[in-house]
Amino acid sequence: MKRFCLALDLIDDPDSIREYEKYHAPGAAWPEVTQHDIDCGILNIEIFRTSNRMFMILETVDDFSFEQKAKMDAANPVVAKWEALMWGFQQPLPWAKPGEKWVLMDRIFKSGL
Image (cartoon, rainbow, N blue to C red; front, side, top):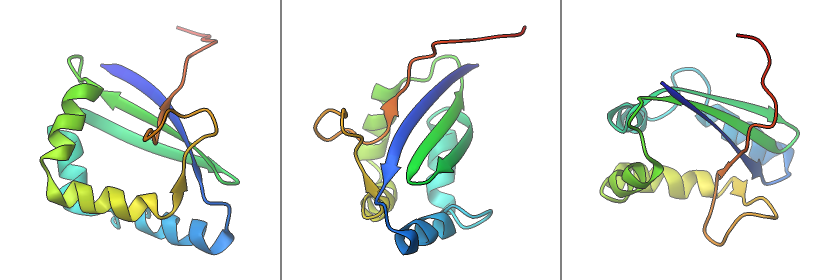
């Protein structure tokens, strides 16, 4: 299993943040999108938030690749619709590359087993 950590900002507006969280409440995410993530090799997704900064942990199969997921995303119109809807709540991090949403984070510390 692989683990990836990513970050992204939401638009800093309390009403917008509440609406975004409604889409991510238990059972509220579109089932076609969650199944697509599974089909792409994602085993688990967790998203945490502080203020308007979000942190996502992806746990994936060993042969997962972001390049392959991007190809699969592009071929799925429901995922494209979901991403367009979510982008209305999101904003790129100041250091994100053009067109980049979630930015991959570098692990700088690990403790334990």
